[in-house]
Length: 397
Ligand code: LMR
Image (cartoon, rainbow, N blue to C red):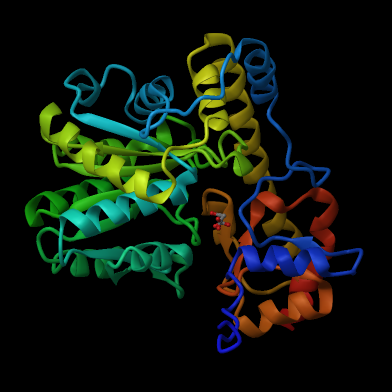
């Protein structure tokens, strides 16, 4: 039955972690997957999370199923975090949120719902984007198209090219946008550019799907929601897939949410009924633990303040690593201008290293970065900086 099959290629990101684990080199560094590490190379459990778990251990009374769309307390807290507690969208109840196993789970539920309800709809993704985006949408049977985003010459956004293509997308198609900390480039839209995108979305009647996996990792929890708020304030219907993997460090709890914003409450509830069908067919109902942690923290003023501080510390460390990386490359005499790394935001830096250089880093130095040249800055430390920069200097020369 099975011997006719040939192996599938390893995953562009998680496949690197598999290879990294097997690598015997004692100096090896995994800068592939977007996982935050502290100075000692550990991915910490946040103190606010530990405290919430301690409380949950005492208070939890049952392991019965959650509703299909997840924990009501978690869903309400998610909306308040995304929009701010007093936003018109929340007051008018025209948003509905469904808990999902991670941001990826939320994207897949969105994809299944769109594929079922909006036949023939295409999903437009940026070039480049997270390598799993096309797979998620194609697996749901959706056609994926792309729009320009990044200019490799300037290491910046190619906004004119992006806007030109957005202006040709047919009405009813889905426009996938990264809310903040664009993965893989670390290059985000500025406020005026978000405004221009919101204008195109409104005029051309597109459906924005905002992938919001890194809230708090660019400039702050509120600041990073600026793009989402710009789309929200345009008054259009849209979807948000958000993740708590990074900003709560809850990677392996698989906790995220799909939020849909419709024109009114009745429309939102109708759409939610289809979202629930997609969830039931995929994984029946979501796992509870991650949502209980997030809801406990967001609904407790003291834990929430602690968590906000911890997000700030992670953000500051990552931005500090960006500057140190640029400085250390300079110190090593690397002539190429890498100053753009300090301007990029989020966990990733799109280094501009080519596939041969990426391969040399891995083969000769056991430094694992994604084939596109994406470096997880959040995985760097002061201790590993010299080794990395020496290796980059060597593969560039
Ligand atoms: C990444 O891009 O490294 C993260 O989003 C983790 C993942 O699932 O790929």
